[in-house]
Amino acid sequence: MPSDVEYSPVGEGLGMRDYWLYVWLRRTAVIAAHVTGLGLTLIISLLSRPGTSLFSWHPLCMSVAYCLCMTEGILLFSAEGCPFCFKSRKCKVRLHWFCQALVLIAAATGLGFMLASKNVSELPHLVTWHSWLGISTLTATVLQAACGVCLIFPKLLRLSSSPLRLKLKLYHATCGLLVYLLATVTVVSAMFSDWFQATVKGVAWWGFLLLPLFPALVVMNQITNAYLPRKRITS
Image (cartoon, rainbow, N blue to C red; front, side, top):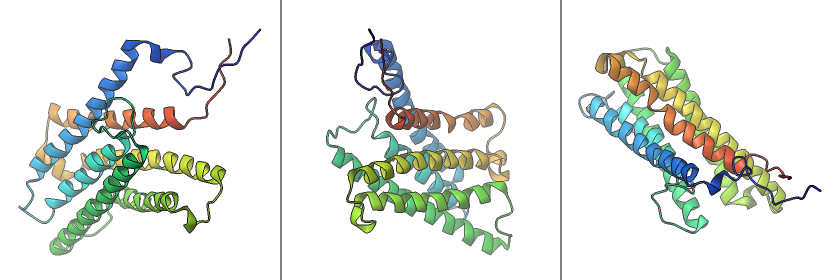
C-alpha cells in the first residue's frame, strides 16, 4: 500500500540531502557565487578606474548594485554556504532590505553618472541594447522593491489574511528571480560595449562573459527549490 510522507521540495524528495557529496556541492556552489560576485565587482572597479571620467563611475556603481549587493541580498537566505550567521529570519529580512536599498542607491547613482557623461559628450541616449536593458532592469528593480515594501507593511494593501501574504511572497520571490536574471543579461550585454571590448580582449573577455552566469544559476536554483510547489512523495 502506498504511504504518504511529508511534503518535500524539489530535489529533496529523492533523499538527496542524505548524501554528503550533494550537500557539499551545494555549499561549494553558494560560496563560489559569493566569491564570483565580489570578484567581478572588484575587477570591474579596477578596470573602470573611477575618477578618470564621469563615465568611469557608471560601471563601478552598477557592478556594486547588481553583482554585489543584489547577489548578497538573495544568497543570504541560502541554507548552505551563507557567510552570515544570523539564525533569525527577521534579521535576514532586515539585511536583505538593507542590501536592496543599496542596490537602488548605487544603481540610481550609476544612472546619474551615465546621463551626465552623455550630456557632457553630447551623445544620444538609449541607442544600444545595453541601455534599454539597463533602464528595464532599473524599472523592474523599483517595482520589485515596492512589492517588498508591501510585504513589510501589509497594512498598505490591507493584507490581513495569511493566504494573501503567502501569495504575495511567492510573487515577490518569482519576480525577484526575473529581475535578477534581467540584471544578469544587462551585465552580460555590457561586455559587448565598446568600452569593455577595448579594455578586455582575447580569452579574458570570454572568461568575463561567463562569470555573471554562475551566480545566476545558483540564485535560480535557490529560489526554485524554496518556492516551487511541493509535491507528495509516495512509495
